[in-house]
Length: 378
Image (cartoon, rainbow, N blue to C red; front, side):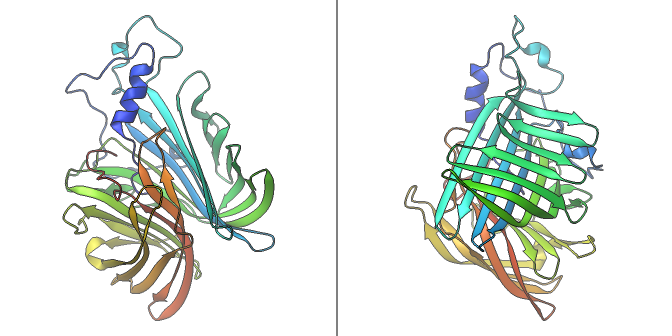
């Protein structure tokens, strides 16, 4: 999420029970909580935080081919810990190389805007025997699942994924330092202090490489966004889902907003945003400073789920008003083999004004909880 990404406990539990030598967690055992400033340091915190229950590395972006055709892409890696730290001894004997406390999942997608086609895929594997995991070397972390990988370095991030139907092969160069959201990376996601994550972004990555579609490779360039988040908290029971937006404005600034939706239809006070100035300095945006309204919707012919497709925003501080429009209605992610969650994740454009000056923007939007409520999962 970006903002919070979702791993369904039932799906993870089923995988867990299939792993040789694993056992259920006893009541009262717990994972570390995020309840204050995260004090993140780089490049170390690009790497995994394996004691926390849930973590993800998330890339999206808007690209163009040499002849001007637009594409969107997503590549996300999730890590899920199955037992609390310090309880590895509860795993049943005999010991096995297949036994693990970590599961990795990944989602990938390419949006062919001109061709009006959305390609997506998913993977899942245990974090052992070289199937999936993280590898650290001086200044670099690599997250991988099979032949899908994200290499996070100080000067360049490299993304590689090949599904057979489509592929992503991109080099990304940060144009700004990491942005810490909330209070020094401590990003609230509910009423309770521990309903939070450590959350940072690389908000403007210059992208270059290729997209493969149905056996044909297309050279592309563009701009990407990276989120890295980790936590052990579940979404609070009164929350239904969230709407997340990342926008890269034509004036050289960037904007992240997440709206947590309560079951009664109101927006949670824990919702917030971050405006990143050209210099890299940030302005925190409180929920009380934002007004958002969905103005157009699209219904999926595959699932029957209805998603917002156009939005109107008004932000009082800083003074901004703008509209967000999806670039392709059908960018619905269906993930029965991994998280079991159906959500919308796709390329968008925006237009508006800041302090009286017009801007255009490109970015990504994530919509969850429209298929079924997300309360109780993270």
